[in-house]
Length: 98
DNA sequence: ATCTGGGCGAGCA
DNA sequence: TTGCTCGCCCAGA
Image (cartoon, rainbow, N blue to C red; front, top):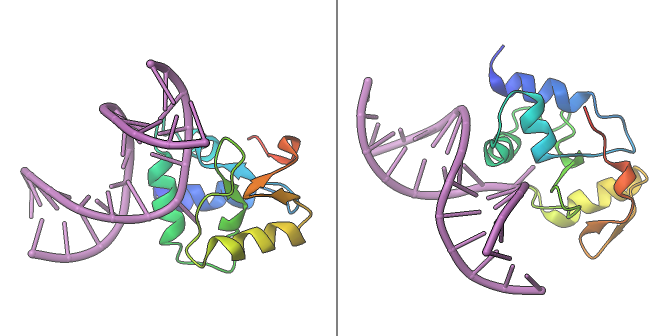
């Protein structure tokens, strides 16, 4: 199982209604400062439907980018119960920690 | 609030 | 194989 799959699997641990950060995810798979690497993997996500890559946000609470459009990402999160304001989540406690 | 350098890994020449 | 670019970033100043 390569790094990408480990990342995807970790991401699947994040329950609906919660989100995680690139930083947390990176550390969870053993990367100290591989946040950008995580982002790249999400961008090249081979399973856009089964992998909830929209549940990954920036460590400062901002939504960040998204291959299909940041607005799409924002909408999806809203439907899952995450409150978003000006591109940032309101409830920091919604962030899932591994 | 803005800028900056650092950082990791996949893809392609 | 080596080298370089790019991407949904981060922490510090």
